[in-house]
Length: 443
Image 1: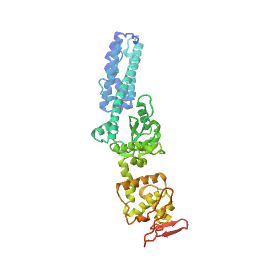
Image 2: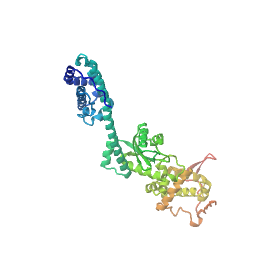
Image 3: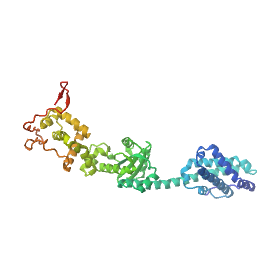
Image 4: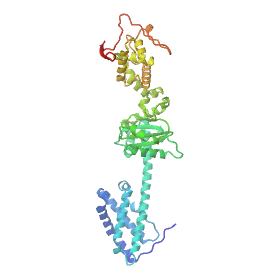
């Protein structure tokens, strides 16, 4: 439906409005300097560009006022301004600009309009300002949509480069364009995609909004059935992921290790993706789980970095020559099902010695053999270490073949015989507090 035609102003009014274009533009710029803080903060070049926009707006009003059926065009108003101006001057600032121009023209209605044209000129200004406001909103919406689509493509390329471990110049350029050039403390997070009838865009948008509410940067894409997020700017990724867990689909959410910056995120990505593949092997795992906690499952699934970490963290320290008794104790304790007494009998040592050595093992490896889950991690690590052929138990410390402790399912562990000339090692070397007697024992 076409807009209703306007009444025609008198020739004197038309001429007065046309001659006042320069004066109105100057007055509009002066009003902006007086009333708009954001305008005063702009650089000289940007103020000049905004002034061109204001002048174009007044010229557009005069042309529209002269003609009857043409709608005002916001595109022609912004034509002389560079595209970057939409990043500096927001839509709210543009509306401030339109309001200022309207106020300036309204303040001159009495002097510009001929007899009987005052109301017509005033209504024309208001109608023009309404049309320009809607047209400006359309311009900014189009710019935002184009920028959003371009940013989404850049985001997908950056995440894909992280997945492939490509930290080259092109990735750095794209990350900088997204504002990630200086983001530190980056963590890779992966889970399942939430069920959606339509596209996966809502899932990504919801995740971004939820993460940014916590003051954290986020890159997110959907890759088949996986929702992938890279969060940056936080040293507490678990807290952030716990707050946005509803944005993921059912199943585990695996959090990779935190790395210094985006260009080292490939390591975090590999660990998280490996953890997601291995997570079904741990049915009792928490929904939000660190990839570090899934090291044994990842190792069983064939993840070589996880195997190396376990061997380096557990087997190699225990297999050192100086720690050979600890390796024997860990092996015997695990084989005995976690029994102190059975381990002491198998090694022919006092139970206090076993306790002391278990504490040393925990200090050395970070794993407590009294905890079933951590004991299982140590068992896997020791098996991987033996398969690697590293740090075999010295023959001098190993019991003779005929005297080894024999244990079968459902049978008791028997101690092996003490070699001739060797006294039983009843307590650990050093001092231990005997909790039962309150005295110290020295071997």
